[in-house]
Image (cartoon, rainbow, N blue to C red; front, side, top):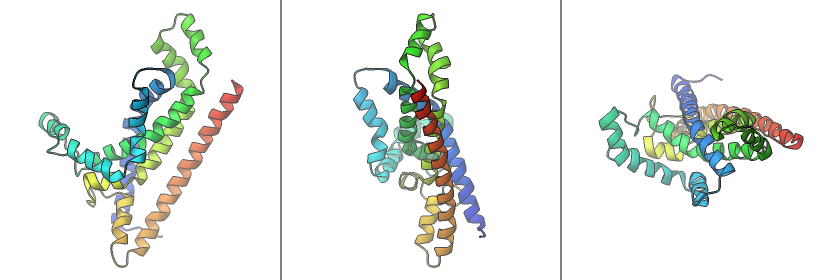
Length: 230
């Protein structure tokens, strides 16, 4: 199986976008997961709904909202370009943003489940010994949640790698700049004689997705075993 230069570029760009999206979203996912798992506050249901909204919204809607918000004429996009020279629309960085938002719910959910599996009595014991809330989180909650964080990161990476609807709406399908595996497959399906290229990229997508799911399952089993031990 021989890949063309354009296909290799699309594969490498997809990996780059998915990696950046995952690394950038993990700190926010940990913070939101901790809030949902450990705190009761007014508006918690609203926050939970907003976090999971990308899962139920049509991806095109999410992409259009990104375009009118972070586009060059959008309020945030115009501000970023004016103050920092950062342009997200029709750039690979915009694709990373779209992928991060679409993958965020899966990442948060995996981390939240892991944090909820941590015995609150362990955290309470550390607090009674004089540890601050942040220190308890840093030394107890976070280390015990590592399997869930890894599972969330893997699932988020796989989702970001396969993101299509929001990405193509926000950053289009520009070869070498925003053309990912998914958008390259779409391009092949719209072109006569593109079946071979479609199959090559489909196989790559399936292999990466299966590896990600297997790794995520291993992390989930570790969380379950830890819960039984506790």
